[in-house]
Amino acid sequence: MIRPVFSLLFLGFSLAAADDTAEFRARREALRKATPGALVYVPGGTEEEKGNIRSGFVQDPNFYYLTGWMEPGAAALIGPGVDVLLLPEPNATRERYTGKKDHAGTPGIAARTGFEQVANITALKELLAAQGDARLLSVRMPAPEALKDAAGQREVGSALEALARLRMVKSAKEVALIQHTTDVTIEAHKAAWRRTAPGLREYQIAATMSNVYFEAGCERHGYPPIVASGPNAIILHYQANKRKMDSGELLLMDVGAECAMYTADITRTIPVNGKFTARQRELYNAVLKASDAAIAAAKPGVTFASLNELARKTLREAGTAKGGKTLDNYLTYFLGHGVGLEVHDPTDRPGALQPGMIVTIEPGVYIPEEGIGIRIEDMIVITETGARNMTEALPRTPEAIEKFMARGKSAR
Ligand SMILES: [Mn+2]
Image 1 (spheres, rainbow, N blue to C red):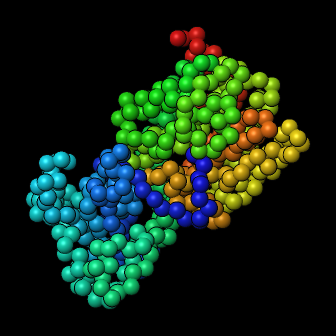
Image 2 (spheres, rainbow, N blue to C red):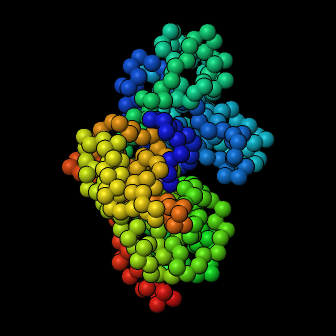
Image 3 (spheres, rainbow, N blue to C red):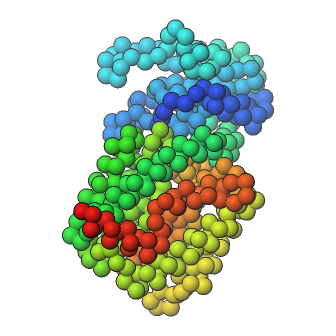
């Protein structure tokens, strides 16, 4: 999926799975180091938040990253010598709908959460007062009302960038979780390739793909599936998925699952009838060349911005569209973005890539004059010496795609 915003750092919302408490504790320690002397407030998601009625409760990704806690209405307070999980008071009415919830009085709660202390959320004001005049920061801005009320006259600053920098570099455990989501998503794409045929509707392919990851126990889509046939592929975030696909057209699928809180983001573009036309192949190979060049150049110390430039240069030299403009004119966005707890995880475009960063590489060309849109999106993890393509197992060349589709058809 193409990132629609242009800010250096971006944090939003997402959900979860059990992990051991040690890693979450280590992340809180890293946040303390990154915000020396400060007291950081970390609000969790609530059941009242907009959109929950459709999606079900989804834990806030920043809160999840630092706590591993999956229940709604909680918060955390992190600072020098402060490691407190704040839980809501028991609410009998709500529990009739969504089940029993833990609270500060639940026996053994501190050991289970891995926090030094578990307190009632109403204790926030006292806890802040006990910390004297420590600098107060929040990982949600503007600061939540509950924090402003408890803080009184004290100013609240932002810890968003400090946390974003931590989230950009994935731990070994996170890389493994993301690889799992990626592997499940690859199976979803393959299922779509086996089914794709002229006359089907885009939503039928979306249904085939979603079914694979829901069957595998994944909680939700990482983002709304984009299944775009023919001219729809020019629309970067096409989500209607209603059109009937025809022989001779391309089908662009930008679809990713979210499993155990971590998202995949993978795009492939395939021929509806299993065979690329000469022009489709030519354009596809130009995009593939740009992708290969960027992936080959990715390594620690190189900037994401320079990979973007390299992909553009490769497209510029690869050919022209009808009308004569070079192909780089048809790549209208930045090359990629971080992926993790969110499909658009925090990303540093001008900064140097570091081992453990996971980013998409998603060059494309979208040519209205020819009614063709092609995108190839892979996820790479930066290693000590280069980069590993986490989505390599999903065929990328026209020849491998055609071979897979021919085999899939004959097996039906
Ligand atoms: Mn993407």
